Image (cartoon, rainbow, N blue to C red; front, side, top):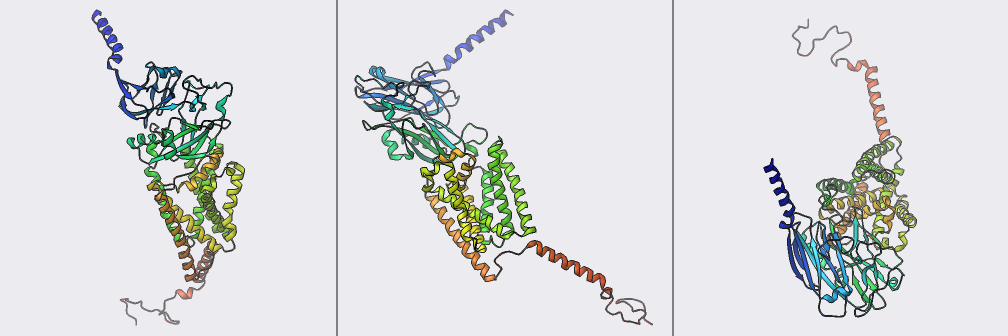
Length: 562
């Protein structure tokens, strides 16, 4: 028993000292305005020493570090205190100012909770006197100055929040403006920028190189794209941007002091609009095989409708019913039922099949052909209006009002149907050619991850989430998108010309026949033929049988005819 107790004590002692033995403390040097790349893990603590030059004009230094996927801890002290000088994030940032700079060195400690090695890049950027301090007026933050961006995202949109900055001061003998009194910092302005990279590519080196193009003021102005208009002190420090899951984006904010005409950059943030750690709807699900298969089938069907849609009018009616019921049911379920996205999509698809059968039954039984042509024209108008608001026209501030936006959108949606309703065959041909060719382009787009699919997706997002109307939706229109848009135009025009030529060549009526009437007439003809065959038994006599003949030997009989 004594031996057991002794072994237990030895084990506990070894266990208590094991972390300190296995922990490794590494010291590195980081030069101002230069990037350093380091490897950290759970048993490694990294100390970065920044040598501050003897330059009395330096007002403050922004310390920042970045990783592609997993968060880590950045701290100004070796002992981590999240409520004073530490932050845990994939893109943490801290500010050092005032008397600390007089010591000649600044320390930044990096720590990871991952067992595996994690690659981190860090940079220290110095700003001169009177430069505005990013995040310098955050009274509710865990740290005194918070230059980091708070980014949250889902497959629909990305929200970027940032804290108010503070006006700069003389590095020699000045002091920052007090935030509580609403002083000079209220005249600062802010501008959000973004930089896109690596579409559906999760290469770590590409991501870590991308943030460097958004780290300094000059780099942001050179590589970044402005998002919306500049924000003032009174504006809410929240910007909503449309998400593209799988698309790498770096966000950053520049704060401007108009009195001294000086800028300062917040800490850039890397995101893909999806999570690397989520088990459901993560980055691995972006561009999944199932999505590509479904869109490929839709693309093939769209290509058939593009060149033969008017001939396949009953089938087009079924597809129209499916689209109407899926769209409306998904919006209603999103508004009134708190179900997951996958459940809503599944239920909407089932209701879409029901709508398809219902549309076909109404067309078959009641032959409301002009009404269905009008419904097809409204789908054409939906695509037309979606294109209009996908263009820079849709980014006008006037459309951020929900009522104005939907009134204008509905008017654009009804425009093609109203103009072409006098020529129902032409309207139906144009609708099937344009919408069918767009379905084909969306199928191809799923393999190259372009932006043309967002023409319709953005409208669905705005219908489901009213606040999305104010979101920034300026997508990059690159060469693959230009090629696909050109192919779409060529296919639509070719489909219209081919269908018009074919209908005139075959001299078919402008509208398809009433299927119920044809079915009823065929049934009547069948009954008439059946009744005639029952009423005329003579027609079923043998052809060689004559009146007065007692018996006639059948062909091939062995009996003698005497």
